[in-house]
Amino acid sequence: MKIVIMDGSAANPGDLSWDMLNRFGDVTVYDVTPPELVFERAQGAQIVLTNKTVFDADILSRLPDLKYIGVLATGYNVVDIPYCKEHGIVVTNVPAYSTFATAQMTVALILELCDKVGLHNEAVRNGEWISSPQFCFFKAPLIELWNLRAHIIGFGKIGRRVAAILSSLGMKVSATPHHFTPGETYTLPDGETVEFMDVSEGLKAADIVSLHAPLTEETREIINRSSLALMKDGAILVNCARGPLINEQDVVDALKSGKLGGFAADVISKEPMEASNPLYGAPNCILTPHIAWAAGETRRRLIDIAAGNIEAFLAGDPINNVVK
Image (cartoon, rainbow, N blue to C red; front, side, top):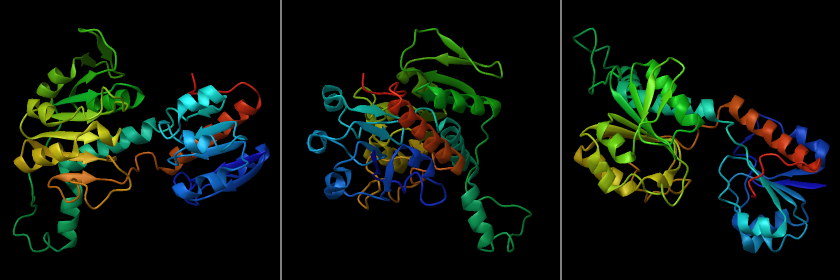
């Protein structure tokens, strides 16, 4: 059994091991595979693992030995699913492995926008506290979260986890789930209630908006000039879901005008970032390079689940199969 990992350095830059896969066959790991080498490296493989390496119909049609694609992520839009369904190729993903880490990053970004830890740490390092005439100083307004309103768009496992953490900080939380009935609510572990409402209503009420929706045609650029206009002046927006959920230029315009008080994201529309991206250098904007999932414990869980997916496939009973 020939197994090829196309872009292994994303999940495992060298601090973890792929050895658990050796029991399934002959494993070859490539750190990164450029598009022009996908066919050459995948040729003859029965199993490939990919994170962001694309397997479209053109590539798939030239890989007659391929029986299984394991996506090392939750999203699987890098694979042509209709082609795989038609040709009997099993495709699996790794759902819910990064719930805790992504929620943690979301709240870290919110806290950074509100408490500006990085800004003040840099000021101290630059000697400003040493030269301060007062026992303290602050270089920008700080925000207390207690009793403010957070609205969460997308209320799956990550959204619910973020809601629980923000509620524990004293915030009032509302949400827009993918499907809901008006008047429906959700009870958090601390007993507080999350009110469900439509996007427009939620945006109008929120001091902080956090995006956790999947990318669909319905949610693509759900945050745009029109929806931003509904938000409170100075509200904060955070995106740890998918980059194309926002119109990046519209968000930058809102930051420059002061309509948005801050924006933070772990994802952008095209990754890695290009110098021409309007978010690059935007004011009151914090960006991290898609690392919400990158804690060692989280990546180890990802690899463990991926190995379990292969084992189930080889046993004839696939799990986490996304080909319906």
